[in-house]
Image (cartoon, rainbow, N blue to C red; front, side, top):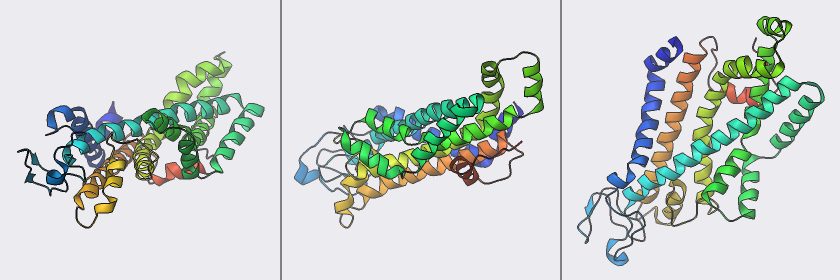
Length: 300
């Protein structure tokens, strides 16, 4: 409980959590907060490219303006938050489950199994993630489920290396040897000792991974390989405004600011988790990524 109290008192984690909760609340309450239907197109010639705080001919105030088809940008931004945040959290959950399972299995099994799983992880790490993303998404019809699975399936390798490193460190501790001498099996050791004690760096990596997944989804949607139109996501909202940056810069600016805000919230929360749940670790949050991608480190 003391760790969670420290987390609540930490200004960075409180700010990061507040940002993410605010974005999540805006996404959940989108039907109540949105001033218009995000897909509705009125008289396009009269409602397209309306500036922020403009009241259109439909007597609706467009607080963030409208896009090239006359759709309300605030409504699309709120509904886009649903998709972008869902993609970020769901993709990280897939990576965490897959990478954690492979890393813990490798550390617990050892021998040939460990070498084979780590060789598979290293082979997957050899390919640039963005190339894998583009190749996989280009082979299939883009959809929300596909984007989540692709992001999750290309982001587990660092988690696997980190989980293995933490599990190996925990399994080498004296109390684990004592438990083994008492007849405790490997499976029970992993469930009751390894996983609970290895969660701290994995949670930090997951918090960082959410922001990364949101950014990658935005990049895919910007290239036309992510969430298909007309469903709004922050990425395809930016893409829809790239040809109007001069005469209607608000179309791309507000979704870009939303992505920046989400990434800042994830990074602040990760820093707070690091200091509150692992106070002895005095390295910055990028160390988690370095450990995950580099050689396994034993932090006993």
